[in-house]
Each structure stands twice: as structure tokens, then as C-alpha cells.
Image 1 (cartoon, rainbow, N blue to C red):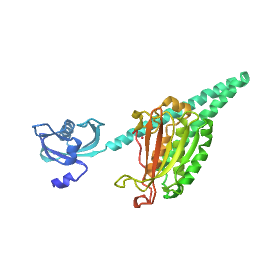
Image 2: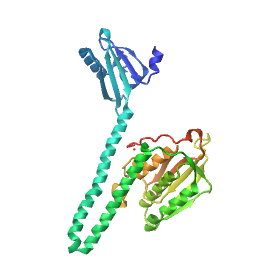
Image 3: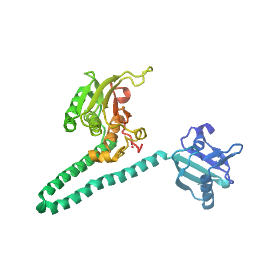
Length: 356
């Protein structure tokens, strides 16, 4: 019986009529439902004992969700607890770890709040500019032209934000993922160079490519082009004028154990402002901006890198970044070079935290 209980992922505890644990499995101990101070007997968590007392007095099953503080530092442990009264004053406790569900719910709440905030800014600006334009149409034609240009800018930003929100929703599973197909990396690079020519020329930034020809990855061409375009446009936006952004393709040889072999790498390097170490782990979160003022000046939505990470993950690959402040950054997409058994169908999309 003990081996069976210890094999369960749910925590199971049985308390006697004095709240002393007479049965507990490994999961319950890992969750902290049962604790043992040095030199003392095991005892149930205070919250568990309180819940057991309520069940005894009421004689009804209780189901509650709790956030239990961990023994070590970190986010609280979210548990769904079901307490049932047994004979002789005993109470059975069943606990399921719902920490991840709580995290996802928190991410979604933050996402809705961020979307509302991001949409509010351009919509508010459009309203004010429209009113100013009406007032200036007859009195000040030059001002009217300026307001019209700002309306064009804000509407373009709003359209880009909505477009990227739709793209992110689709990548997160709103639509079925396409079957992976062999994609010519040269075609990806040529398309990216064509799409980023205009923003690069506007800042006198050369976008160049290096690497062997004839490389092939497996996935969806449109999504892969989108990912690399986002990386290059980001590099252009955060680089000073008259610099260079390079796209380098290569075959990952892997380490001495062969780890990461069988992958194609597409690296985008810039000579820009770089990223602070404290921001590295968060730049792939939705709406996270390391430099908010500069992001707004460049028209960034804060969704580009989140989209890149989703695309990489959906293709069975990943995206890494190496950066030095004041020197530049290199973002590297690692994608499968062959249709391995596990990559014959793209894996389900994953949710990215405000870890995004």
C-alpha cells in the first residue's frame, strides 16, 4: 500500500482525531503538507489541521484551493485540497499541485492588463489628435499636416499591435500547427533581406548575410521568415545609424557528446546598445521592454521576441541570446535539420511566462 501511495502524484494524508498524521505519502511530504522539526514527530501543516477541524465539525467534504508557503524561498505552492471525514474522527486529505495552473492564470491576467494598457495609449492619442486636427484644419494648415502624420503613425502602431496579438494567439494554439516541411534556409534569408531593406536603409544600416548555401530545416517557411524578420527588425531598431546587422547561418556540430548536433543555426548579430544582464531572462516575455522609452520611440509592441520564442519552440528548437552592453547582441535560432521521429509533427504550442 505504501509503495502505491508513494507512486501517486497527488498528496495523500490521513489524520487521526487528534490531528496526528497516521498515513502520508511522498507527494504530501514534498508539498509540505507534512513537516517534521528536528527531534520531533511528524505533524500536519497548520492549514491542513484547520481544514480537518472544519470537516469534523461540519461533517461535510471540503474542497478549497490554497497557496502554501514553501520551506525554501520561491513562489507559494498552489494546491487544490479535498478533505473528507472518516469514522472515528479521522480525516483524509487529498492535495493536487495546481501551481502551474495558478501561474498560467496569473500570466493571463497580466496579459489582459498589458493588452488593455497598450491599446489604451494609441487609441487615446488618436482621439486627441483627431480633435486637434479638426481645430487646425482651417486655422493652421501646417499643424493639420503634422497632426495627420501623427494619426498615421499611431494608427500604424495600433494595427501592428493587433496584428501581432493575432499572430501570437495563433501560435499559442488557436489554429492547428501546419505539418513540418523541408525549408530552404537560403530562401528564408533572401526573404528577410528583402523585407528589412526599407527600415535598414532609413538608418543607413547594412543588413548582410554569411554562411554556407544549401542548408535545410524542417518546419513552416512563413513562420520561420517571421521569426528571423522580427530578430532583424529588432536589431535595426536598437542599433545606431551606419552600423551593420548580420545574418549568419551554420550547422550546429554539437558538443563532445553530440548534444545539439543535427540542428541548423540562424544567428542575427547587431552592433547596438546591448541588453543588461538583469533583463536577459525576461526579454522573451510578452510586452516586456528593457528600455521602454526607446521601445516607444521605435514603435515596438513588446511582442516580437515572444513570437520568435513561440515559433522556435513550436518547431522543436529554441532561441538563445548573448549580449554585451554597448557592444551589441546576437540572437540565435536553433532549428531541426532533419525530420527526427519526434519532429514529424510539430509539438503543441506552450504558454510563455512573464518569465512569458
